[in-house]
Image (cartoon, rainbow, N blue to C red; front, side, top):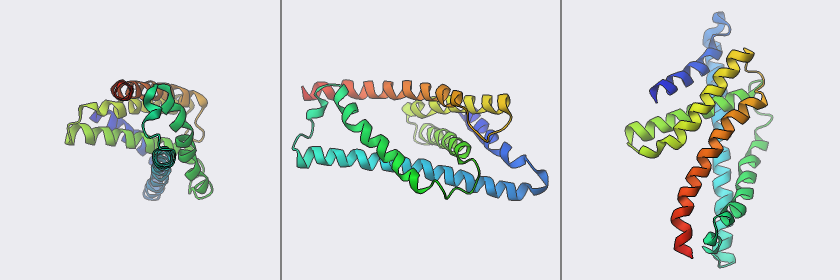
Length: 191
């Protein structure tokens, strides 16, 4: 896990060495860009959680059907996925024009990589949570795809679709595995 964390940091830090004469300024700009990318990720997570909880509040308090959607495995996905996606994307509209760098897309992905690796390292090493692999495995996939993109294209101005597909498939598989484990516990309790 520390190797992936080191590789993540190496990928991020390689941006700082584009111009060695202005390395200090480039490093400060890199940190600013990573913080903007991290802000995009955190506000997206916050928006998804808030919108899903608003739907849960409506289901529980307004419609008085708090656990009825757990009667089948597909119902919670159909109920909570659209508001979660909307809630994750809505805060991004506020940040479209405030990015200090030309390609905030690349910095958001590297910030996501650092968030994955830091979270999995903290959960595994400090808190000894064995299920930190659900963060580590997508982090590995993202690290490999960003490294391959850097090697193949040599620049991080635009992230091609193949990078999203390669890392997204692994994240989707992990998400489905986590959901199946959760559904196996809760769906039989409601029936």
